Length: 390
Image (cartoon, rainbow, N blue to C red; front, side, top):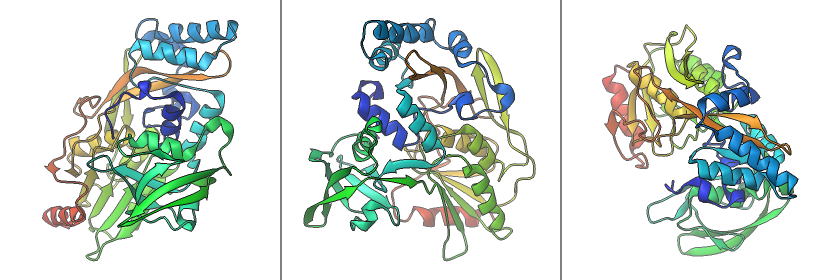
């Protein structure tokens, strides 16, 4: 993923990217999505006034109100105020975009059904094609190179911008609209025209390797994912090792990451975070499997809530973390409604791992650093598990 500041991307590209990636820029969506326990919910405007940079919320709300009074776009005015504030993870959504954000956190989205990553040299490679999706019906395969979207070259672009192009404009109801994909497979180059559709995310997949090790791959922490992880782990035979694959996991709902942690921890601290200058704590539920050998597999696309989970398992000695340094997104955002119905998500604090480590800007360093894109990386994980007593 590019280090380009998302606040300097075109507005529609930035919003579409966040929506598709389940809002990597949103560690927490506060009361709107129930990310935190009921007792931790605060009025978004009160929280922003106390914990955000001085005047941050007021400046954004004032800019939106003045723009409305002048007949201008309150969303664009609010975005300019967020950009000037230096809030790297702050974002402004129109009412339609915010509704789509909430739908995505419910596991629904509009798109063509493919996942992609940026390879060395800037090439965009298809990493997964959802069965039954428009992309699958058009014959797109994992490993294909995506060269263009609607005639726009995508080589060198951040993956977030590419995904935004695939999704289309949230405010124009893109489901049913067509998009042209320029593709390459070996020496063959061609164009496919596909129709966007309403899809549901397959956030958790489980498979068993030849020697019995179970791989639980979590793409994002949408609603219900935590319980699905716990259920998957409970079905694994006792004593059998598990690889928790968090590569490319862009985050999502913190509450779901905490529930997932509860599959491997018997209560205890998962993370702390601060809001209004007050420190709060997130705890795992009791009864998790604390003896099963566990490897957490991460990469530079492991972000936000996925980093929170990784840090908890690492700090508490519950998992060996394998892969490359994670992205480093450890800040907390909360929403507030702006004039005209738009919503601003502004940074109000940061979270820390059980040992007190901050993640924002630094990420998590694996216990064993290996190339997470190496086809043999799961074999490395199996070797580690065998040393843990699988």
